Length: 81
Length: 81
Length: 147
Length: 147
Image: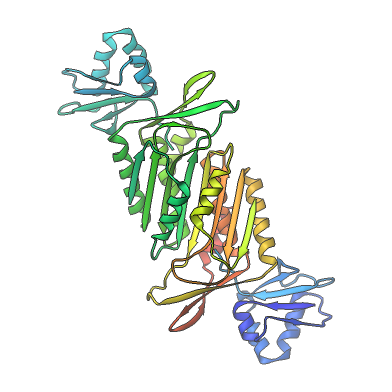
């Protein structure tokens, strides 16, 4: 699936988007896999309460299932308007 | 003093403004004097709850004193905006 | 702070644009426009607005000043027409500018609630059926209770 | 209903004027404009707005649809810019049209509250001191509770 990063999550991880092959069942499982990769991922995902997640472009919870999902995005709380 | 009428009060009385010489102590006393004049005044002032009054261009109550007042206006509830 | 009472039409869009352009240090602008609405029967020929010259300007200035003080507005604008208007014409507008949106919204609603029930304007609808004074709505008077 | 997400500047006044002019049978129009505000230090060079293409349009359309249904709006408009903006520039606007003012105001506030916390935009302030992501405000999240 495609994994997207925005705002300071993008900056910490150092890229806006990447292709991830995963068997993770939920968003939280995917986060665990990413955290284990490298320090920059561990830093970006250090505090999940400071992060929001969208699954296929809909806001979701970290326990959302990933079966059939094409796109997951991680970002800080939104500040539009 | 000058007495002004607006909207349907003006239409019932048949004029927008008139000079009134009075010793009335309050707005309510003035209303009594006007009512006693002619049927059209009695009609216009039949239901005081449907009327509003301004004394020297400030909204006031019917028991407001008239000493030193130059202008009294009667009109229905306002419908601006 | 600007308050205008006039018979002439005004350009609502141009007023909105100019108002927003002159705000420095304000993050939020709210505007309201009142538009002449047709009758339920769809036969409105005109809306006539009578007012009380002198008192109108005083009442609007006082309401605008109170809004400015109470919500710390950077700016406030009120324009209200009188005379004969056609369906679809803009009757009046208010605009407020504040650092944040909550103040700008609250002040605009306050202005409208007070202007509706405390500024001396009276509307009359002209149709083929005759001329009818618009009745004040109980909810407009009740709306003042929240401030 | 119209929703636009764009990098280019837009003419807030012209949008307000055109929106009000195309309302038939609506008595009330409310607009909101968000403006790039300088920092407390007065040294803002630019505001950069990042967004999530695709999701942004979906989120705004859903919020606008909900407002339209919930308050029976005659019309609703949302425009939001992204990219680099200078102090004083208009970031975004919403406009609502309804038969009466209470619905137009409530719908505009609802749109702003949801747009602030549920549409994927992120602001960054650029000053000589560096670039800082604007933090979400607790009161913006709390504001959703009233709807």
